Image (cartoon, rainbow, N blue to C red; front, top):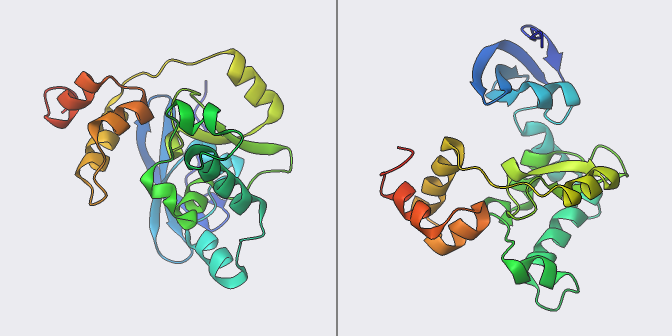
Length: 203
């Protein structure tokens, strides 16, 4: 597939300055926001309109208008209810089977920075791997048809350096996470979580 050069193109408030790293099959671009901040963004997120600023656009939307009555806030709240509220009718299929929400998404602002606006009324929040929890790399906005297809084709978690780095970061953060909870969230065995943390694999 021919690579598309995005240098000097503008997406929302972001101007592409140069090509960044390639992670798997995804090319990242180093961008400058109108506010002066810099951000590395995946090509697919720029071209789809998912990311249009360094995060300042979302912050302004929340600060200026408030978002408690928006679809995005409703999705964020419902996600937490399914995973933490034992009285929720869907808890048995989410929190009851170990599906959790990452600590970063305890904050609606962080969730909104990561996921941005829902593309259309036909889109809902989908976990890419249904056996893992809610966190930025495992979630996307998808139509109900796409979600139905994902439910039919279960994906197996593959341990990558990116996941290993995330596990180490969450384990050593001020909001310390147990090895057991990290294993459940990322679909990694307890022994591998321990090996990742002590640096014997994926250094």
